[in-house]
Length: 148
Image 1 (spheres, rainbow, N blue to C red):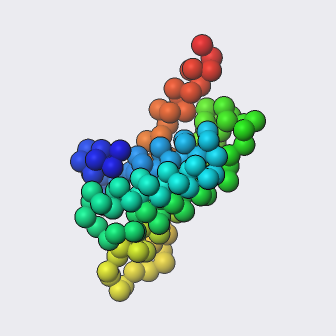
Image 2 (cartoon, rainbow, N blue to C red):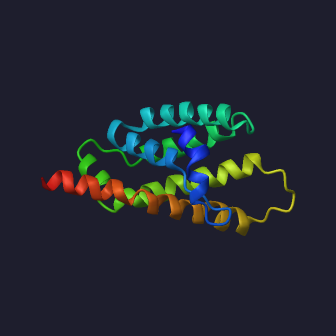
C-alpha cells in the first residue's frame, strides 16, 4: 500500500492535494476488527510509509496511528455492515483522513508561516474530502455484495 501511495497516487493530485489510500485501508480494517487493531495497523503502515518515503521518521506513523484510533471509535460489531456499506463509511474516512493530514503536515512542515486556516482547510479538510471521494467504490461494492 505504501508503494502505491508513493508511486501511483501522486499522479491523481489536484494541486498539492492528494488522497491517502492507506487511510482507507486503516479505516476499513478498524471498522471490521475494532479500535485496537485499527490503531496497530495505522502504526505499522505509517512506519512502513516513513521508511519507504524517506521523510521524517515517525511523522506518518504518528498521524496514521491517531487516524486508526479515531476510526476505531466507530467500531460496533453489530453495525459492521452499516458502517462499511453506507455513506457513513465516507464520513468516517473523511474524519480520519482530515486528522491524518493535519497531524502529518504539522509534524513535517518546516515553514514558520503556517496559518491555522491553511493547516485546517488546505491540508486537512480538502485531502480528507478527496480521500473520502476515492473510497466511494468500497461503499458501492459492499452495497452490491449485500444485495446479491
